[in-house]
Length: 101
Image (tube, rainbow, N blue to C red):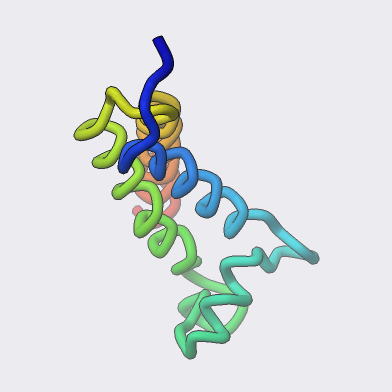
């Protein structure tokens, strides 16, 4: 039986948007950096150096993806979104903890 499309189907889409925003388009600037700067926010703590705030902003996409995947696991794509977002959240968290501390 096919799974129904619903709120949980947004989970892999949130993951996809987060991944697209992570893609570098030059030497080190990601699409997310450009969008964050267009919104008037800082992508880095010290110009183009220091703490990379974009990593923190990405949680805006991955945490809702995880929540939607958990809450609506019977919807099409929800399990994939949940698993991908969980893996990415763990990797980002470990990276941030290792780099910042």
